[in-house]
Image (cartoon, rainbow, N blue to C red; front, side):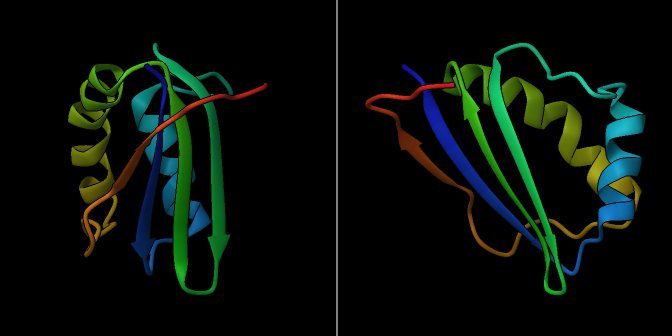
Length: 91
């Protein structure tokens, strides 16, 4: 079942986001299991909204990406990430 995940990183910058993508080797692509990805960079930090094929795909990706976020100085999210089951989506 597809899931939607929302994560906020207060204080994180677009430059840090790009560095994490570079370190992870993502480039312009997407990791296995990712359906769509939106990153919103604002004055208050980053907000990530992703659509994943399964929660297992998300968890595998987080094991790789979260240590990299800390490596570039992004603090772990203060709030738990929000995960919602998806009833329908169109890409």
